[in-house]
Length: 346
Image (tube, rainbow, N blue to C red; front, side, top):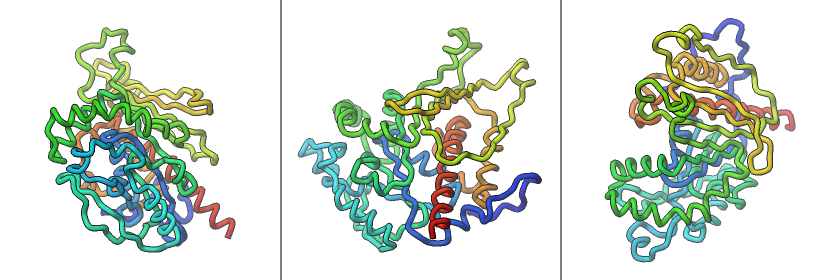
């Protein structure tokens, strides 16, 4: 459960009031759009934000409930939920507008284990609302979104994650699922991928490149389940506070260094300026802890280790966890900037 942090590191000045308190002042919800293909890892980053702030502060609308057809109907019709015409996007826009006005709406729900729709659930927006789905960054939602994220894993990683998830948790069989995924690839290119061109941050996930960095003469084997993460950020409108990470140079030069890579590369992305942060391997736990504590000081919340129980294995990997935190930090700073702007304009 969430609770206020017991103390503050000397020399670190808290935002006054902490973000959690600021979010409790009311007003329309801050809406964050998280888009990507099915099985791309969208929920991994949504979960990271929720763990930082708590379920009473962050709520999620899963767009799967707005599909027009359930699984059995799609098998017969051959239509794909990646096609925007096969989703009630106009209804979703109406719901988002109503939620911004402080109204309660009935959110349609989809049960992935059975492939059927459930009864709509009454929903009132918390201070931060995450819109998560295939079409979350579509133009009709753009005026309502305060921050946007696109999750873009490499095809082989996405397929591996989706097959593992859908066979273990959603009742699918491997061979029909693999065939469906092959058919979906062109639909993804046509209807989903373009959303990344204007996202505030694009999270690209590749196979680890540690062996390549070692000129293919890596000692032993690269860490299992290590990934090369590329985070492409639009430059922030407001400057971020300083954040100093700690790395042990002595261990880097020792007999058994922890294999990781971290760099930032200014670049152009779809014709606009961007900063790309690259991470690979296993991030030092100390650096992960520093970033997590910085966020806790900023939000006024600490995380009970019990909140991490049940996290999927790939989320526990230090590089994945570090990426969660690295994405969450500028989102929270942007939220604070928006809230302060509202106060200043009042």
